[in-house]
Amino acid sequence: NADFLNRVNINIRKQNLDIFAGATHCDSHNFLQSNVHNYLNSNAIWEYTQRERVEYNSGTYIFTGGMNYQFDQNNFAGFKFKIGSDYKDKDEGNGNLTAFKDGSAIDQISEKHDSHLDKAAMQTVNAYYNGKIGGMSVDFNADLYAHSVDKKSNNYENANVQDDRTIGS
Image (cartoon, rainbow, N blue to C red):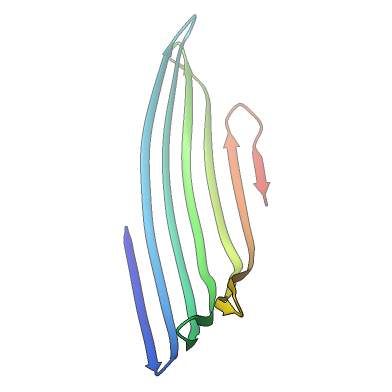
């Protein structure tokens, strides 16, 4: 596995104004390999042997920014936004499963899958006011969230005995 995270932030303060911004980049590469053997002793002896290999790559950009302002000792207001996007999200894998009954192979299934992200975007905005208006205390917060994802995936199964399958989404 390899993960890389880069981040830069800036904050500027002048009198009662606070302005901030930042950018984050994350890049990840993961690899998984597994071998599983299951054994069940019932009326018949069942064995399942499964091997799988998966490789996954992802990358994300996130940009943040906003400002805070202190009007006086009792009144504050501000907003913060975050915009993000996954620029890559891909996994590929393959494996095989062999089923045995009483020591005889009854089926062997080879599997291959792949998926990729066509687009993913995320936006959040927060605005707030905290203070006093006349003799009344006010604590106001408003949030807006938006997130969209378009991901495609395909699974292919080839069996020696049972039916082959192709599944896409």
